[in-house]
Image: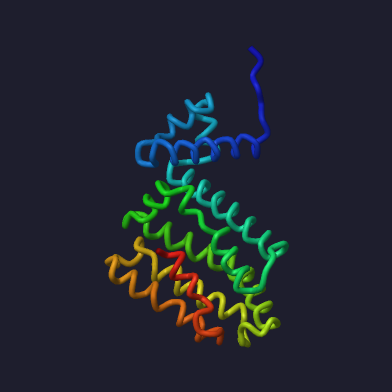
Length: 207
């Protein structure tokens, strides 16, 4: 039988894709490195050449998910239609990875994974803030916002929303989350000096 030799990047991508599929369908905790090997029909030495542990493989899966979300968000900024408020709604939808990956995100919310989770949020904020800043600048040009520092404003808002509403970091009750969800649209409107009610869609999306 002829042995198929694949280039390293192709093989690595296959391993990540197989792991992601198994993590989503079988659950991360119940999936082993052997399961990934069996899925692809590869040897132990092959998978451990690329990933030293299941945790390292999970990091790669999360990176892939985040990069896919970023690519979608970038397309919104480049080709999206509508004013700044409409584009922000499109950005939020494009960056949402929770609907397609609920099991993985539940795993990240485990207190034992708080370090990985926090790093993932911080990386996402740093990566996406320039996209939101570009849309905020558009909003200023359209007369919807009045902001002197679009990038810093985007960084501040994303950090506040992402971290304060994340139950993997703060053990909020549903009442705590509701109170913050109701308050955030008004807080954002104040910061960007938008008309009252402009960001009410944020609360509606959260319910």
